[in-house]
Length: 117
Image 1: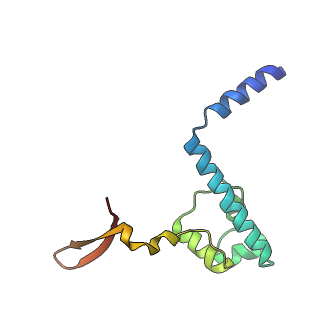
Image 2: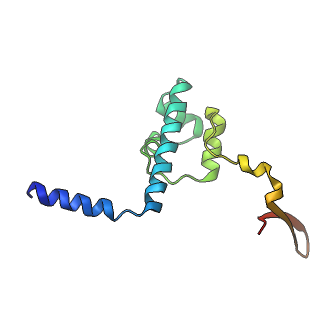
Image 3: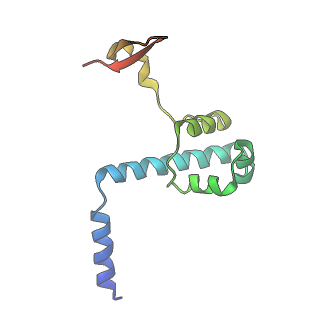
C-alpha cells in the first residue's frame, strides 16, 4: 500500500469516531492512568495488586490498557485498596436538586431521589 492511501484510510477512521465515543475513550484512559499511578504510589507490582483483588495479572493489564469497561463495584474495590478516588459523587451533597420519591410495595417501601425538574 502506498503512503497517501494509508493516510486517507487513517483520516477516514479518525473522522468516523463520534465525540461521545472519544469522550468515553478519554475517560477510560484517565481511569487507567489514575490506577497505574496509584499502584506505583503504593509500591505494588501489577501481579501483587492482582493477588490482593483476587484477579489474574492479565486482567490488571487489560484495565491499564485503557480499554476496559469497569463496573462500579470494581472501581470501588480499587478505590478502597489503593486509597484513591476514581468516582466523583461530590455533587450528591446538594439534595435540594433532587426530590424525594417514596416507592410503596405490598411488603415494603423504599425512598429514592430523582433530579428535580
